[in-house]
Amino acid sequence: MLASVLKPVDDTRMRGKFAETLLSRPATHVHVAGRATGNGPEEQSSQICQHCIFRGSRLSLNRLAAQWRYWRLLHRLQPDLVIVHAPELLPLTMLWQLLGRGRRFLYDIRENYALNVSSQRVYQGLTRRGLAAGLRRVETWAARRAQGLILAEASYANELPFLHYQPTGRVVILENKYQPTPTEALPAGPQTLPTPDKPLRLLYTGTISELNGVWEAIALTEQLRTAWPGGARLTIVGFCQQPGLLQQLEDKAQQNAAWLTLIGGASLVPHARIVAEIGQSHVGLLPYRPHPSTERCRPTKLFEYLAHGLPVLSSPNPLWHELLHRYEAGLQLDFAQPINGPALVAELQRHTFYSQGIPTEVLWASEAGKLWHLLDSLV
Image (cartoon, rainbow, N blue to C red; front, side, top):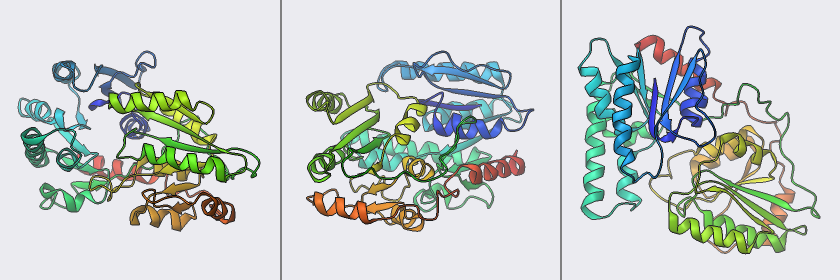
């Protein structure tokens, strides 16, 4: 069983990558528990079942009810193995393991949660410090009890103190590389920029937040609208958890409907829609603001853009630059400084992107083999 609370049951990592990898072996039956998507009924087949354990706002009391639903699901399904994708499910998972013989779980560490809570200022004062300390303690206990630990980022091996004394082979890094759907055909060649007389389509995907640079993406588009002869358009696709920010963006999109499109916002967006927008765009944006919680991570959207041959404009970051340079995939741009639109247009038109073709190294296939190695060796 794969389980989270805030991640939807069709989450790209939990369902699209982990579950799809497990389903490659015919004798495996997978249950995925997570947030309701609102995109139709949960998936049910002979090999996979989806279970909605949470719906509504992340700060609602229904989040507590999700714990009870998860607990009942554990006892009803009696899974051979649980892969936990959310730290808030660790206490019940460890209790379930303690109450039965031979019960096993893996912990998929998708974020440095304690660092995020302590540095992103979503919570204030004592609440922030107490929550960060509590998360770190629960994760430390879980690291001792889990049969294996999975890291979504290589940097976590140095950042998380409870990993320093783990035996060799119990910790594996599985990055968020791109996993095509079974019916998806990846493009044979890279995306090309339009001729100057045609509009330049820019794309911002994923979590919509100020930290992730949504205002910087809009500011860049406003500059390129006059610098690119055919004008520029921006599509923002993703989920926004901040009502105040969402209202500002909706007002901005309504006032500038000719060049600014907002998809999702208050609701989760199916990943297929995001992939479709990638295929219709010319440049993908990673305008992140400098922050400890993101500076050592390689975002999922970066792998998605690379897998589809989409040219990228990113904030300065050594980890991202290494990939962009290796595959000739894009340029780095200091979004915090005034943007010289004409100079950027000249650089885009002069640059040759993906001259060696679309890289296969950014696909999930390499990570899938590591996941099976972990399961076969530990479970």
